[in-house]
Every structure is written in C-alpha cells, then in structure tokens.
Length: 83
Image 1: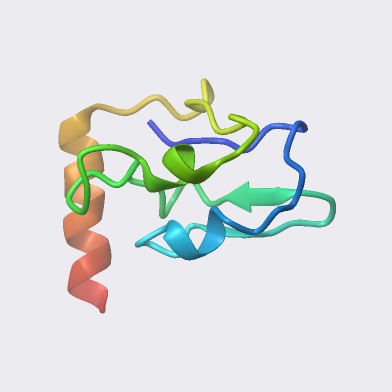
Image 2 (image 1 turned 90 degrees about the horizontal axis):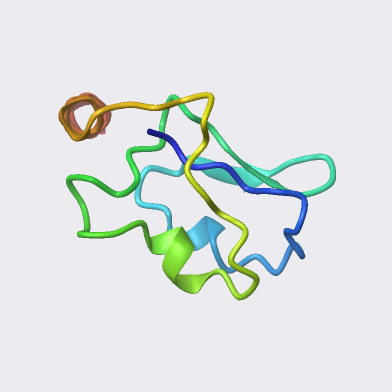
C-alpha cells in the first residue's frame, strides 16, 4: 500500500521532511507521494510519519496501490540498499 495526498492538502510543507524515503514532493498544485518510494514508513517507523504530522488529515491509503506489509518491507530493503 502506498499513501496518497488528497485535494484537501493545504501545502503546509510539514509532511515532506518527515518522509524517510523522500517519496513526498511538491506537485503542481499540492504535494504528491511517489508510490514507488512509499513504504508507509515500514522498516523505519511503526506508523506513517506524514499521516502523524498532517494537520488536515489528507493522507489516506491509495486504493490504486494496495500492497502487503511484506512487499512494503521488501521495497524498504531495496531503497535502503541503494543509499
């Protein structure tokens, strides 16, 4: 599962620095999450950090990118091996 930032985003900039995988970036109108980098913080934290800091609660699970925790952990290992 990857997360997605919805249209309710107020561009407050608090989520981007919290992402350990650098999956969040400024989009044309709102912040966006790269599903290829998002692990929902699996491997780093017990819960998604962006969701924890979002003041408008606009970061749900992306229904277009449903993945198991095992797959998210696999992605975490691939991403951290590249660093």
